[in-house]
Each structure stands twice: as C-alpha cells, then as structure tokens.
Image (cartoon, helix red, strand yellow):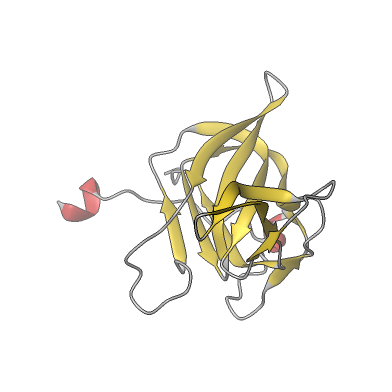
Length: 174
C-alpha cells in the first residue's frame, strides 16, 4: 500500500540534458560538485528556462551560500513574475554557514522560466559608513554610537552568490 500512496515524481526536467538552459551555466548539470556563481553587481539572479511550459510540483535547491532569496516563476498567462517561495533567514542549521538544501513541495503552477533573485548571502559584508553613496544597499541608519550623536549607515557589501544545483519535478505520468 505504501508504494501506491507515495508520490511518484517525474524526471528532473531542470537538467540540461532535457533542454533546460541555465544562466549562469552549471547549476543544472546534475553534479553537486560544480558551483554556479553570479558576480556582486546590481542584481544577483539565477535563471532557468525550459524548452516548453511545464507543470511544476516540487523544487529542490542545493545551496552553497545563499541566505535571503526569492524563488519566482514566469506566469505565462499574465506575463509577469510571481514569487512562489521566499527565504528570509534560517536558524539552527548546526555547524553549517548556510542551509545546504531547500525542498519546496506542494507547488502547483505552470511555467517556462524560474529565477532565483538573491538579496543576501552569508559572505556579504556589512560595513559602517558616515555617508551613503548612490547604489548602496542600506541595511540600517543609526544616529548614535555609544550614546553620542553620530549619524551613520550600515551598508551591505555584496559577495558572489553561489548555487550548486536545482531540481524541478512534476508528477509522474503512468
């Protein structure tokens, strides 16, 4: 009975062997040893494009250093990005710097593109600056240090965002 009640998943159609294209390349090759990285420029985004519209029911992300990110899908009917999953913080991950694996199941949408929009990594630095410059990602603005009036900004210095692998599944057809 347990085999009849368990969910049967399709093949991992995020793999490059099934025609999926990843930007940057490397996080859909089926190998956990390879790491795809995005430079710390304006936006740190990982994109995955399928050759056709697919029904998505489960996504597994094998993480390297992501701390805060949104998983979005392209709504092919409304022609807009929709957020399906948000990660803001992970605590109690034992001796790890970042959670190694995210499993998102009970999903039900159709799409031909996924994106992971990274806002923070565990390698990002937060520095104190007296004056914020254009393009700075301000985390906090404080007016005092040690009880003395001293306006300053806490600014994020972004690092490379790194991802090991992504798996995307639908329900198996019988």
